Length: 310
Length: 283
Image (cartoon, rainbow over all chains, first blue to last red; front, top):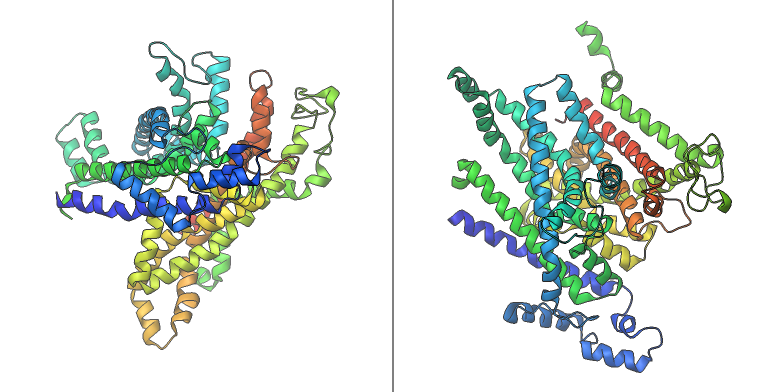
């Protein structure tokens, strides 16, 4: 229990750091939101009036403290400068799709990583092993959006198995629309994980307890289950470390497949200088990253009792 | 046998080991080819990458145009070659500042320890939790789309990886006796840091540099695809792919071939990094 409290406490500075970074970064971006909202024919006076109404003429420190007070006392993340909708609602309406995409990507990642790593480790230094070890080298060099296009070409255009963009309606359609995007993200995530898990598996396969299990005539799939549990810890931690990268990659992949998730909202909000929305997205993403790394920490503790007592 | 190897200079021994590392040989071979093509692009490219031939747009690959032509009738092969020069130059230049800053911060914070080290640790944690593209995209907006934004974004965030890895390595090295011995022998902090610790972490930094150049290249191409990177008419793999995406269903080679150029270059960088790690026995 103390372990859980300590982990929760350690994320506070991280979230605060991310939020401060975004706040100040957005303020140094040239381009005045008031001028953007009013359009090209606005007068200086009307721009000034709108700046005043939106609170953009206040000192930076006061804008920051107002925003923080709003967040912590009322759970109010702000209102969009462009559409006047509450940020939380805007972000919430888009976050579901992105969250589903991330979840599906993680599932695909595991489905790709575990069999490949097992195959390579059990055939150490064989042809299969060498093949699997080449995969990460090529995988790391492929830009995610390009992989997305190739998958569209292969499964959408040539084979016509899956939809190529947008989110379909009807039973099961939304999920079907997310298969190719999730596969794209998973292919980007898998390479370093395959490498890490293979190395761990090779090490664990040599351990004494594996020899004992084999000598006890345990079926080989059960031996592999024990080996996987022991080898999984560093890979799960690595997955947690890469989660920010994963979420960032999702934003770009959303663009390739014309998905209306957080990524689309982020790109449009940055280009219209809609500060509160970008801030809200950054806050939600930071919380998500931190939440997932806490989850992976928990998973590591579950897999490895030594972590709990340390 | 042992007497002859003992007499051989370390650099020669290093080269011998390097020659027997297939990953390094293959990686450097690819990089040399890509590099030569990039540098000589203006001389060896079959066409001017900017010259349009609107009557011959989206032509399939042929003897005259090996990679076909794009929507404006420009030769895709010539553009892929010219883009190699653009994208590699940006990736290499953008990797330099983070390398120097990151290695210095990692070395000093790992060596000094204490509250400065604690602070660096927290900063690194924050950046790790930060969705990277959100940051880069924001910075690129701040500095304006194009090369300048990319350099600034990487100067701001690129040092993190080096700082994290070099700091951990330095801390391990500091626990080894010879660092204390060097200090006890009267060497100054500066001399221990840059005369003795730096050469020890340098191979690790070079291996990281290869991965970073690869990641920056992919990011530059991605930003180009999003319309935030290299601006037209300068040829860039990312904008070529995003322009070609419109014709994916009927002219698949238009977006596919520039992407293959990215993959080939990336494989070269990644094999070189892996090979160097093997030769220096970093794994």
